[in-house]
Every structure is written in C-alpha cells, then in structure tokens.
Amino acid sequence: MFMSSDKTDIDSLLNVDHRENQRAIHSYIKNAKSVDMSVLMESVQGFIHHFSPQHYPPADYIFIKHFPNKLFEEFHLKCEDRINVNRFVNKLIVHIFTFIFRSTRLLKTSKSRSFIMLFLKTIKTCSSYHEIPIEQILQSIDVCILYEPNKLMFIDENAMCYIYNFLQNSSAHKQKLFWKTCQNVYNWHLKTSSLSPNKLTLCIDRIMTPCTYGCDEERPRIMFILLKILHRLGFLYDVEFNINQLFIITKNILQILDSYNDYEFLGLSIIWCGILNEPRNSFQIDTVDKLKCLSVLFAIDLAWKLKKVLDSSSHFQITKNTKLKLYIINLASICINKFDDLFIESFRPVVKQVNRLLQEYIKICSFEDDTIENQVILLQYCIKGHLSLKTNISSKEEQVYYSNLKRFEKYPSLIVSSTKSKVSSNLHKIKRFIHGLLDALSDETYINKLQTEQSLYLYEGLKSGYLSKINDKCIKEIFSKNASCISDFFYGRTPKLYRNTEYKTYKTVLAMIIISFYESNYMDKRSADYCLKLIEGNSETPSEIQVYSDYVENSFDNIVDTDTKISNKLSIPALLRLFILMFEMKFIFDDLDSKFDGLNFV
Image 1 (cartoon, helix red, strand yellow):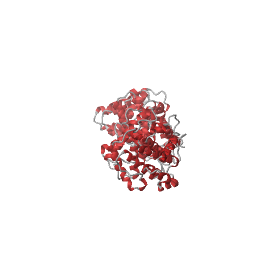
Image 2 (image 1 turned 135 degrees about the horizontal axis):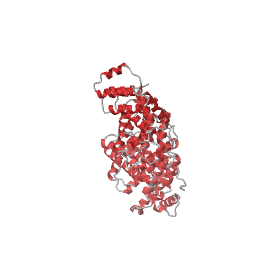
Image 3 (image 1 turned 90 degrees about the vertical axis):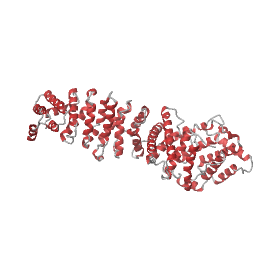
Image 4 (image 1 turned 180 degrees about the vertical axis):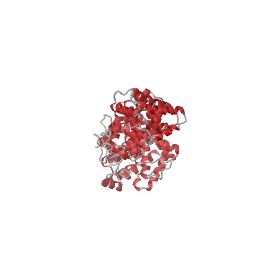
C-alpha cells in the first residue's frame, strides 16, 4: 500500500535542483521495489540520514508515499509477535517516527498514523534504552500530539509510562523535557467521549502496580498527571482503579520527597479532594494513618496556596475543597501531640506554616466580604492551631482576633460572650468568659435548637457533607486517644493564682459547667443561675463552694485510670482544653451523644 506512484511525483522529481537530493530520492524509490529486507532497511535508513538535516518538504511526502510495503509489513509482524525483534529494527522504527514528526508536514495523514502505532508498539518491547535518542523522541512526540487524534493514541497506549524507561541515568535536562512532554500528552481538550474508560483503566493499573511496590519517586508522577486531567474533565469516576492502592502510593511519595515544590505539579491535592467529594466511590478515611497522610497533603497544598496569595496580595478563595482540607487538618491536629512517628514529625512544621500564613493573611487582608461561615472557619482554625501546636497567642494576634470576632456581635446566632479585651486582670477575663459560657449554654434558643435539630448554626450537615468520608470508628479513635491522655492537660506549671480563693471558685464553677456540657450538652437555667451566684460571691454559705469543689474532684477522678488525684492538678487552661475537645467531638466531628470510650463522669 506504500508502493504506488503517480505522474505528480515524477514531475516533482524532474524539478528538483539539488543533484544529491535527486539521486537520494531516485535511489530510495528504486530500492523500495527490492525483495531483500536488508536492502530495504538500508535504503530507508539512508534516506532518513540524508534528509533529516534539511528543510525539503517534497522529501517528506515522497518518503511516506513510497515507503516499502514489504518492510512495513515485516515491522508490523515483528511488533505484533514481540519476539525476536532485533535492536536494529527497533532503532530504525524509532528513527522513522522522529523523521516523520520532525515537522508538522505529515501530521494529519492517515499513513503517518500507521507509523505512530508501530512506534508505540516498539517502545513496549525495546530493551536497549541507552541507544534511544530520547531528546529527539520527545521533540517528535510534541509535534505529533499537536493533532488531537494522535494524542489519543499516546494516551490509550500508555506511551509515557514506557518512554519513562528511556530516562535511566538521564540528565536533569532530559528529565525536565520528559515531564513537559508528559504534561502535553495528557492535556486533553476534546470531548471525553473520545477517551476509552476501559483503556484508561488498563493504563492506570499498569502504572499503579510498579509504583505501589517500587521505590522510584518519579514514576508515580505520570499517574498523578493522568488522574488530574481526568478529574478536570469530570471523567475520573468513569475509570476504575484501586483507591486504596493510590493511597499507598500517595503516602510513599509524601515520605520520600525532600521538597514540596512539585506538589502543585503533581496535582495530588486536587485528585484526593475529587475522591473525597465523590459519593459513588466507597473509599473511607477509616484509619488514623489515612487521616494523617491526607492532612499532611492538604496542609502542604494550603501552605503553597497561601504563600502564592500573600506574594500577589490577592484574595484567598475559601472553596468547598478548602473547607474540606481545613476540617481534615483540624481533626488530625487533635492528635498531633499524641503520635511520635516520622509522618507526624513532618506534619507539625507544615501545620505551623499554614497557621503562620493564615494569621498573616487575616492580619493584612480584609475578609469581611466573605461569608460568616468562611470567617468563622478561618478564625477557628487559627485559634485552634495555637492550642494544637502549644504556641502562645501574642498581644498583636489577640487584637487581630478580637477585632474580627467583634463583627460577629450583630449576628445573634454567633454571640457567645463579649469580645471586649480590655479588662483589669486575668481573673476578670476568666469571670467574663464564664459569664458568657453560662449565658450560651443555658440560652433557651440554643437548647431548643439542640433538642429539635441536633446541631449548631454553621455546623449543620457536616457529617453528611465534608466529613462523610471519615469513618466514625476513626473519629472515635482520635478522641479516645486524646481522652486517654487527658491527664496531660493537668500537669505542668501551676498558675500563680492557684491558691487564690477567687481562682478556686472560678475553677470549680467552670468544671461544673463542663460536666453538665459533657452529660447533656447544655446547662439548665437553675444550675446556671446558681453558678452565677457562686462566681459573684452570693452563695448562701461559704461551705457551698467546698461542697461543689468536692463534687468536681470526685467527678474528674473518674476521667482517667490513675493513682494520682488529678483533681488537685486541675487548672482553668486545662479545663478549657478539655471543653474544646468535647465541643469538637460533639458538634463538629461526631455527634451530641458522643462520649470518651471508658470515661464517664459520676
């Protein structure tokens, strides 16, 4: 089928001025009729060698039009058989491909597509990688895939996975060229109907297997690029692949890489957000290991985005995916000080970086135009970050937080206590906070909402939305691990105010509030009024405070299994940490009936 000739070709030959070119073309056409395979291969190789350095368009068309049919059929048989394909044949097929696609002249011809398929079959069997001209191949691929149907062939045949094998011991320059070409191949623009789910499933499976059990940190990039493009096209969920296997690869990548500069390129965060947002797959964050891995990934992604926002003085977009990432990081942060493995060690500095960048963003950028939900999420994340990372809030940071919280006073559903920061002493701050907490937990609207809707404003639907892929068992394990270490909250430096009678009263009342909150999620009006009497010094007898102090001591002694009377170590900061843990468990990550496993108040 490649042997035909016509008058037009003869006329073009007669008009060739360059005698060497004339001789080369005539020799090629003449030898194409030979039955000797060695003559045919030498003729093709000679033609390529002669015209490759030249810009001579007629030669390209003549080459493909008069290509020896017998040689093409021989190539086809050897590639199909995949046995006894000698190195010279492989090299020649590669040279033919790079010659045809050194320019766009033959880009859309049907005959050139036949040679693309030959090339794609050849790279699957080629074993002499060091003899392959990788730079020429990549340049020709970049030309070839300018025509989308050609690009589809490279995607369907998983070509870049095989070409990656040619990079063995290659220079950094060649590797950079490869990844650029890889991005070009998978940058698909046509309708997804052109893509074959079955072939894509096979492609991903072939990439995943060596990535799962190998230690090559670069190879998985091909898979991540492909998955990222499929996600962008909305085609990711029509392709079957093992998500748990993808998790193993993701974890390996996060542990191996020394730098996080390539994460935007890898698209890991985008892929996993897509998986977690897709109700059709059965993937669950059902282990603490999965939670830690994804929280590290999302923290890296947010740090990268925040740095970009701050560098450009632009607005930080709080999207559905942003909220998903923040909730997952927040849940993992609960156990950030309870695990000492290397993975968590890498998590701490990244979380610190996210906190620092978010605080900087809140300080210098106005986000008043954001929704109340978005403002609350960011402030909640920053303030919680100080607790998780055990860092102090500076006076400047405190002022920033108060100025932002002040805006919430006009929203009745968000008022918990006054946001005024100028009080005469720490004791007055504590008293003001307890007043606000009592008002909030005994508020009739709050209690009615809990009893009728079982949720708080801004936290409705979290379990069925952002947290739907986090298994209940995993959530309970996180909180149980922290509950079993609650005694950690109660040890350390004893506040100077500890012996102060007023401090002891506030501590006792706060403990009573926490016990009531833990058991019933609110405080009845009668109990709240009595607590107010205690902190205002209006108790009927001085002994009443001691009675309630003994009650609190007995209750908290049942929290942990220890021979030490932790009630003697209780401090207000410790109680506040415990309250935060309870609040997160009941209203954000679990449900109102949640309890710490094996831990009960009396």
